[in-house]
Image (cartoon, rainbow, N blue to C red; front, side):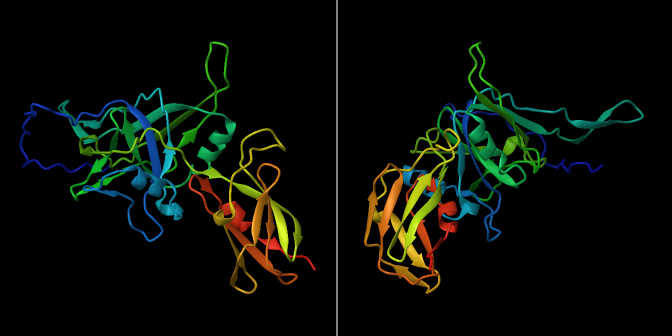
Length: 305
């Protein structure tokens, strides 16, 4: 059993407080999860001189690089986080010697149904870190002494998502969530940045999928749907314009200029394009903040003979 190292040369710490102490952390009301490291192996974090504007926040929420994207969880309630008791060993003389700090567990609850519970479970085994947001709009992470606010690491494999039916108490349909903090995350290193953006009012990306029909050499029809709603009648994405789409001929490795896009039935778009060759493959890429179109992009369009 490894004993945590402590510096006995530090002595006692001063306990004075400034007359206007605004460093207190209030009740957590939201959370942003992200991968601990991006695809290049660099740790995700925020420079200490960053002004967290709405533009900055939108860029993190809509980052095309999933390894750098922030995934918000809003309106968290029933936060009852505690640390387990310190691990100690009792010596032969009866003295208890400190070994290491106990683990901090972070349970909370959000409103939501089975679909969002499924989305949250998707990253259960992913190593992630997180920023908290308190009721005073502070972005809370760790100050490791390197001029960055670093997100708090979660213990890998501890992220648990449940589901509660609504009842007649009345109690809303809800999702209980719990996970442990990484054992090396210290409470005394908690720090924050202030923001001009409303950190407690963010929306995560909505997954969009596609169904393609009526494919010819000069056009096709595509229906864009999300994951919410009755079986066979999911929600649709409306209001996109020709400028929201890019088309690429995979076979020829050439971009295709779209002639026109017309939305007839809500969420269903009719495309007219210059003539393409039979058996060729096309890739459609929609672009709009607030949505993840990766499934649409992966659903390539095959022109029939």
